[in-house]
Length: 101
Image (cartoon, rainbow, N blue to C red):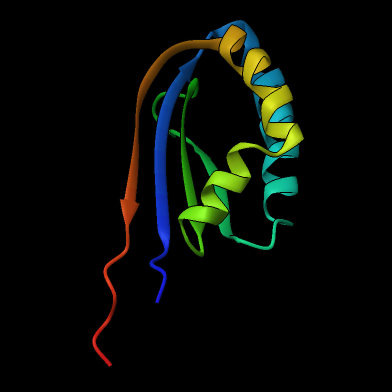
């Protein structure tokens, strides 16, 4: 049985781009949620540091995660995102452990 993939990523955005970043990533999140293999896609804004965001993504398996990374809207978004980012704070990709039946 394929294991779910969980992605957690954090970054801080240059202050002057926060609103544009939110608009851009809201569209990406909505499109991502429509992918067959995407079970959850959320991005959260830090309540204490409003230019810091965390992404939480859940995919049915590694292939679904790789498909997501190659979607046209992801490829188009990356250069825009990179121009808005002040600092990447880390990306972690986890493989969920299978539950005992």
